[in-house]
Length: 610
Image 1: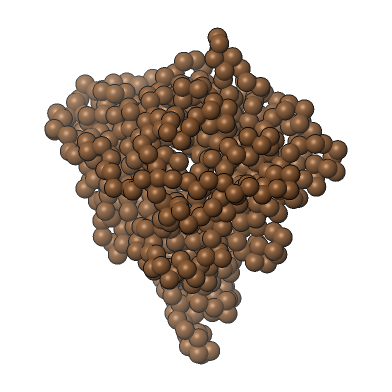
Image 2 (image 1 turned 30 degrees about the vertical axis):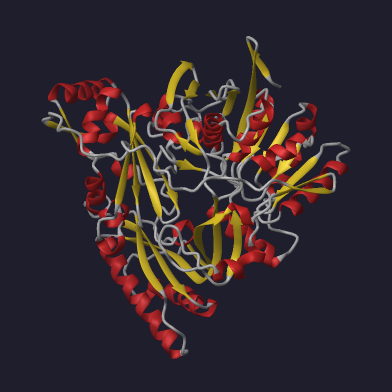
């Protein structure tokens, strides 16, 4: 239900899911207390496209998010209809038509008359031969076009969603669109924004970026986690969207969670590379001067996004079959547990190779022992106190299921024939490996379609300009003039931090708690210093390449750490392939400050009983 602030129309949008596996509690919460015009669902990521592709390979009628029918929307269709609430979701995966058909049947069975539209054209699987012949290489690591493709999709923008809403759709199902499009589409439709309203498109994209990750903007994964009440009933976000592009982030009354400058700033920079050049299908966004205002309890106003003309290309994602992986989790308990785990892992890998040779099978393509409980993820910054209990995450990759299965069986021998303190294996999985390949694709070769009431409409091909224009030149972080400081304090005293993955790299955003802290952060946090801090994440023990960007509107710095998640979220062996914890590794980074400022932190900690 559109609200009116004075004479201004305000569109209220609720963000219900950050993934296809998100909570079943968000939708009833938002229906009960949201007073919404739209409810949006983000189901897709690079990893989930491979899952849906494999689902459809096993069953041609599958390939979409079934929780949309059984958990998030299906059980609430009567209330959705009663509230005249519109739904936009990218839950179609690789089969939007299949989900739309199942949903329409469910609507009929419930005696309702909701109209469903679906967007297609993003699926590129019928073009794989031509794409491979064109010589596309991965846009991040330069690898050649893969074989054994599981899914292939272009990332559409918001205008196909706009077309569906213009035809009267109550529920819009898409395949792969940019995540933020599920919010931008409704805003374009409601406010009549055009393709040339670039600042407004950027603002709507930012609104989408804030809402599409669900509770991450309303207190989830926040640095100051102790300040966030009632995780069990955390409030899912609501965006109060204005025609001038401003948005107020809030949540339903009486729910847990927290909406603050800190929670919103962290989400703005989540999974962002250059904040001044955030590229989506419809616009190139500049978030570097975005401003935040706390205008009430759990109410933050967001403004200041700028836009430039979109590029001529879509981002495209291929997932492919990468062989087989065994993962086994072995608890090892007792003195020198980490040392025992390392020796046992090498012995088990050697045994596995002996068995492979005996069967004339090729060697493992990867073996790795990831220690959980010994702070291995912290590298040189771990607390070296000698953990007396660890879990050894044993990972082997093999081209064939048989080879992976050989190790899955043999690793059980460790409990009786190797290290003292080895306990019952917590879990063993033999799984198909899914690789990710990302590239750019000319928009002119792809035609989006939208189907409603049994009629399919070809939509205009998206336009753009060559991606030759450079972003504003003053945004790369350079060392600031040395700030006088004589006492080191932990970074977390001065800043919030948030991290997220994107393919083979991750970003870490550092947001000053107060503007006057930023010079001390800038003096310490150079790209070179970050490379050294994350050296253990780099290839072959080398410090990874790091790009750094100023974000003056948020009093923040954003860093991109390259080649630290080899294989991406699907194939990385790391404990944290989604990079959710990478910012946590930075919280104890020493920042030099004047002693008077350090004393303030000491007094504050004392007053809290720390």
